[in-house]
Amino acid sequence: MTMTLRKSKPWRTRLLLMLSVIGPGIITANVDNDAGGITTYSVAGAHYGYSLLWMLTLVALALIIVQEMSARLGIVTGKGLADLIRESFGVRATAAIIALMVVANLANTVSEFAGVAASMEIFGVSKYLSVPLVAFGVWLLIVKASYKSVERIFLVASAIYFSYVLSGVIANPPWGKVLQAVVTPSFHFDAGYVTIFVTIIGTTIAPWMQFYQQASIVDKGLKVDELGYERLDVIVGSVFAVIVAGFITIACAATLFAAGVNIKTAEDAALALKPLAGEYAASLFALGLLNASVFSAAILPLSTAYVVCEAFGWEMGVSRDWKDAPVFFSVYTALIVVGAAIILLPIPSLIEAMLASQTLNGVLLPVILITMLKLINDPRLMGKYVNGRIFNALAWAMIIALIFLTVILVATSVFPGWFGK
Image (tube, rainbow, N blue to C red):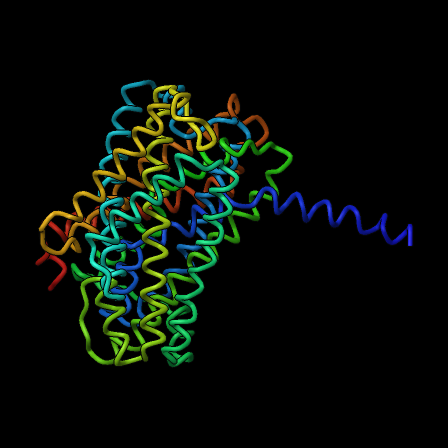
């Protein structure tokens, strides 16, 4: 009996340590499947069928590479990304990057509350009731709860994304065609296809993710000897997030694309699924949209508050009181109030703004990644934890590809006739 206990103790200790570390990677990757992301994947499946599934494998690899660098930077330096940018590149460069991030995150926050309104309207609840209640709820959560409590709630919200996997299965797609599309690359030089292609990258690997994950790692207090567990956290979160994105695409391709139904929003997708895939599939899709929107409506303003306070050296942290970190909580509150208020205005559909915010993410991403690469290859900051040659080669190849796609996106936007209709 004694020998058995001694043998099992290290395994149990490692498991408990892993469970105490996981969180930032899973939460960051999954919250990126927000209202704008779900809209993007829904439109991709409804308009282009399974033809874009092949790129998700590459997106998963790219996501793992980016988020691993973010995690390593945070754990080794004990500082957030905005803090490191200010120390290494100066206040002016930091202010310019932060200004762009605030604009992009505000646009994304608006899209999250649009998702809240749209999903609750499917269940017959007016946006004038749902949006204020959700805004107050997520504000109260961050302002009053501790980091540990907030993280647990966010992990539960991450698990609810499984509803999209169920929705995709219920849609009963031709799995042979799905698998073929996953392993068969295809590309078309037309404005719509290129735009959705780059937008998928922009919504799956968004600039705010690196700032939020690194800040949450610092806030959680993870140490260098926990880096291996945090890498596992990043890998699991990234793979699950891309699987969810794939099933959203599959659900819409198997039903809407097959029936020739065009959509503009995730709400359209949920409503159109009902007669094609059944009420259960439609309800699961709508539930997933609501969960993603509420989840992201809390995270994106929080990410912005971290970024602003890191950049200028102000006190921050979810576990702090308002009096200890007034700017942190004020920035968070401002984004919640403005984001929710815009949705309550009598304005037309926000789909163009939602998609534009995701495209903006794709345009900003190369700038953030180049900055990260400079930081993570600085031996004064990282010591022996700098990138290796292979890792650098993969990262630079990804950045070059993103820049190339961004140039194509701008060209298709300004001169759509160059690539056809």
